[in-house]
Length: 147
Image 1 (cartoon, rainbow, N blue to C red):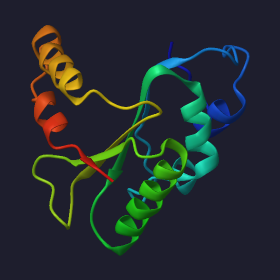
Image 2: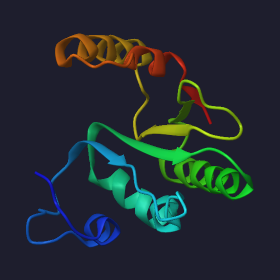
Image 3: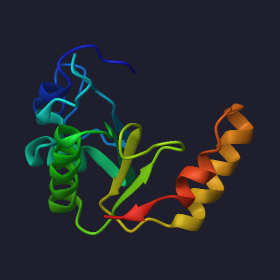
């Protein structure tokens, strides 16, 4: 299902379409404002902890943030700290192919359970073939580094 509305409110409180016991395999946070910054609420512990509680046993949170400049670097550090607070040691980061210190994307992957990186790589490779992806998802998995 696709829900259009306030994402922070939806995750924190739910709505009539959301059963409080429903769990997700993946939650993707890919939100930017007019300044190309992720609004702070999406990187705060309250939101990230609510996301963690909404994930299934093997669920993952994927959080996309932009790289470049002091404001974005500070936002990346805040997000990494909040993700570690909510998910413990199972927080990884992979910068997008072609990223530099001045521009690009930082992709965070977090899970409440230990990640099986070999299985994740295998699934990424299969998804590329099965879904006809033009990008190499397995490369992104290989680039993951614990934060």
